[in-house]
Amino acid sequence: MNTVRFAAVAAALAFAGSAHATDAAKASAVMKGSDCMACHAEATKLVGPSYKDVAKKYTGDAGAVDKLVKKIKTGGSGVWGAIPMTPHPNMKDEDLKVVVEWILALK
Image (cartoon, rainbow, N blue to C red; front, side, top):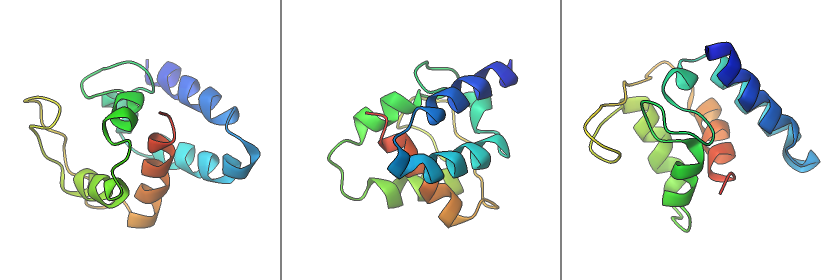
């Protein structure tokens, strides 16, 4: 099932504009090497919110990238419900920034 989810994300990333193709490819690679897709999908709520719902929630929030990078690193709960997001302290900030920027562009 994770393979299907990854394929869906990879297909969506393939359609990204050429200006964002490198970042989309890097975002895909980072996500493939993590457990992101176990709880999140681009357009469907799984355990956590869909990436599109995250993008909508943070539209217009100038501090969203830094806020979400920190949230992914430290984990937490309460923003999207009671189920906590596990922390990902070993993920590099620069990789997380690429992923977060891609997610926020989905709005």
